[in-house]
Length: 175
Image (tube, rainbow, N blue to C red; front, side, top):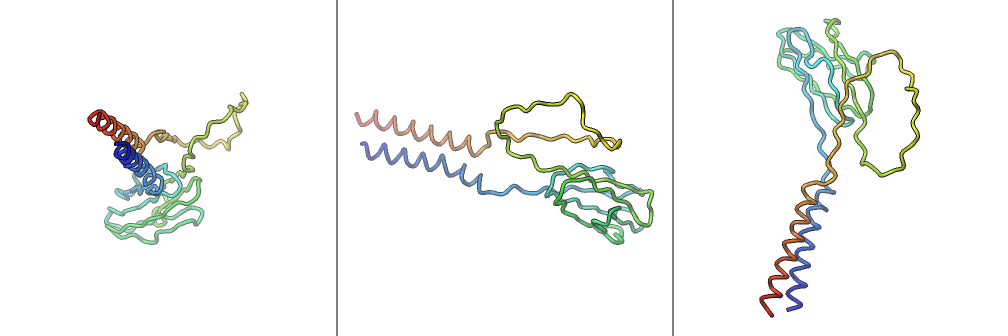
């Protein structure tokens, strides 16, 4: 009887811990964002992404266009109709670009640092005076916070409770 309860509890514990372990070992996938080149414009003209994400430009126009960084970080070369070009951004910053044959076509990629795992800390004193800026408008950036509990943790707890319930039923049946 005790051996059966121990066995069920161990199986429930393994079933509870395994999903959490697998979830922790699975790397996050980097996202790919699309910029369409159509009607002599980049759409969207401004794109905000996270470090490690990729931007793919696709030319829908009948004439060739480029996606060329104004600082030389990337250059697609001529993209004929239907052609695509991708860049993975590995550092935070603002990356302005244009179409070399049509310099009035401009765009911007704003790359933000990946959100760090929140760590409880003592609140730091803040200054009432805002930090000076360069006079340029700040990008409209929305950062979503990941949930503190993920599906693997929920499943792990559910398996643990289920195993404990099964063990309790078996103990009652054997009395």
